Image (cartoon, rainbow, N blue to C red; front, side, top):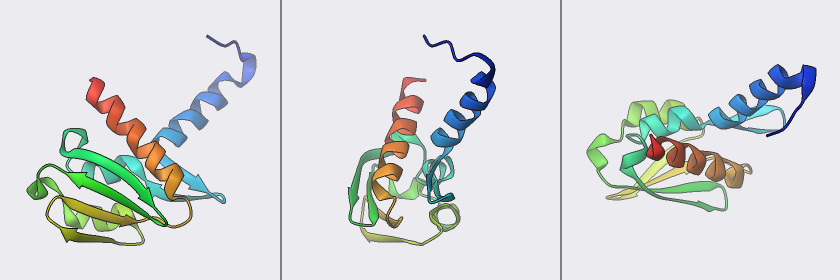
Length: 111
């Protein structure tokens, strides 16, 4: 528990923004909430790894991946190199994107 005084609302807003997406250089790199929905939600995500500029996501059921929504959420593009695998092009903020997406998966899994 932390007492932050009159900046509590501003701090809470910044935390909510960080959980929804990843920011790099003032602009949002990727909307992790939309990305997770496009991937078929938390139960469909098996693994999330960061590799250079891409998120490598393992999915349980390819049919649950919404490619139209994935195209919008990814912004830079994606690839489906093999069944059960989705590569999302993120760019230099990939490590932060991986952490944010993993947090969302963990949070949704606890519900």
